[in-house]
Length: 306
Image (cartoon, rainbow, N blue to C red; front, side):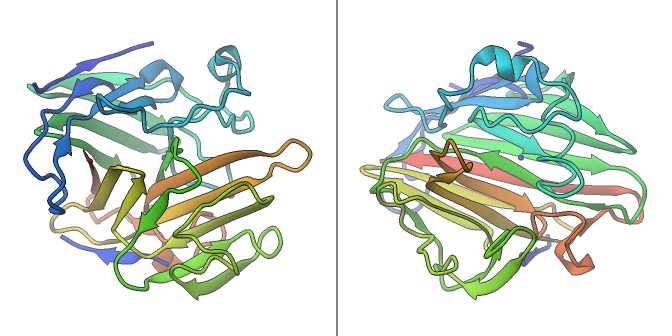
């Protein structure tokens, strides 16, 4: 079964090289680990910032939903409002933190921009930038392809802000010991460089029970596996062939350490175009830049197995 049907209702490794309801047929070994691949279904809502509302196999839902946030609160968001942490996946562009809270496109309705045989395309404008997303689900793989257009040389960050519904025993598997930039720690606005899996004295590769801590870190890798019991979610991403930009991912490890006054648990694994979370704070080499034609493309692929 393939196809996506439109619905209306987010320090790096140098890369070279839709909004919808969709389902992907499972392959024999989607992640190369010998585990049987599982079909994935992706569901999004264009009216609410292109938000991903579901990423599921027949056995489980992978996306976390914040039960403290009523649906009406998320639906009433207007451009410029503080971020509403409703869960799911939010598209954070052209920054994650900094000049705008989780970017400018999560709070705006997206427009359908056509469809293909197995996917649909949507677009959104942020100032003089345009972001297009094509979502497909085929052979057990959910693929999001992004194209950014704007002034040549423009600087951007783009995070696929994915919050996951995983247990205390879940772990993150990353190859080697890539560079890590812990952000907003030990105080707001600060950063600290280290290596995987260190997150400023806390392990980023394991979760564990609630302990009152919270860390956010940018990891210089273009792939990560999320393992939760018998289930595995494998994510890979990169820039389109012939283009160059840093890629990484953000780990949000919040074990009831945030927000102050009313903390709750939330776990984020967020593929990132760029190598910093803050557009204003980032050095030029940590940012993605549009090419001479004013374009830049990147992609994310997700597979599930058990």
